[in-house]
Image (cartoon, rainbow, N blue to C red; front, side):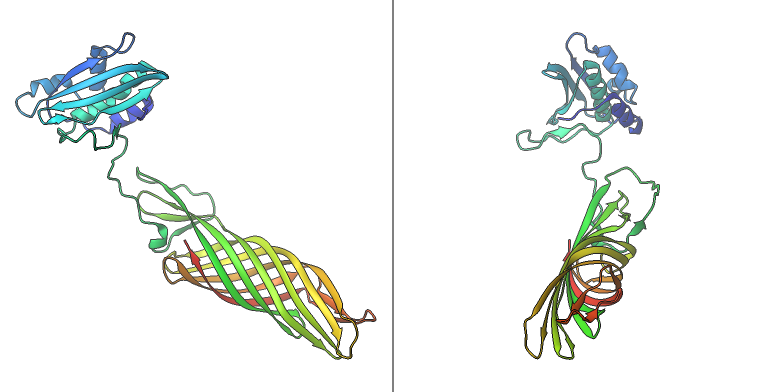
Length: 352
């Protein structure tokens, strides 16, 4: 059961054509205090249809009888319209509202629309679903998902877009990627293995005329494993293993859900680095755990091989906000990480 306000009813009436399709007679019943039959007829005529003109057309087209009922219910009033022809009755159109006048207005809209249509074929009431008051064509086709089409438009600031009547589709694409690569320059003389797992979300809007837009930046969460690796110095060996996690975002520069996506990304992460230093001449192992905080900027290229699978390439620069270091037994330093380093990674993932 649907409810139409007077304002919505007026909007529907303005869109309706004024031509009549077939003659009709009216069987109208409403409780006291509701619009009477004369008022209802005037309301129908105000919306571009005419029962009087329909009666004059008898003999030219198959006659129809419109059975209109308004009844009180627990929360207000309900109304129904049934179109009766020699072939049988149509499915009832139902409306509801808090006041009888509101229901009468809505039924006038539904009746006017029924008068402007050709007679409907009979349907099996027991098998067919109840029809709602017409508001939009039942056969309206939705545009295909953005992931199945070509490049979409990027919207990074306020933008007014004129769209035709229909459905506005709000959607998103979730991306999961596993990447492997190396961190260069983080520890002097060490190529540090790096493994990333990232999850991102991109928000999309598709208009009724099948135009698609990416709204704003992409949100991303990333987990990173650094190492294991080993730093060798005269008389000492230091093993390294780190883990960190953080959040960030990406700004798309080109976005083709069915092909190439290029974006610039940045992240802030925190984690820990474990360092175990031992002397090659023997002696105890010095164990040390340091906090790790980083900020990075990267260029990110994603190529979608299919609707689900993609390849991934990332290259970026990273700033380690605190220095990672290892020391000898006497406290003298073996190495210390510089402030800046770089990384390059390739990966594979899926999106949906």
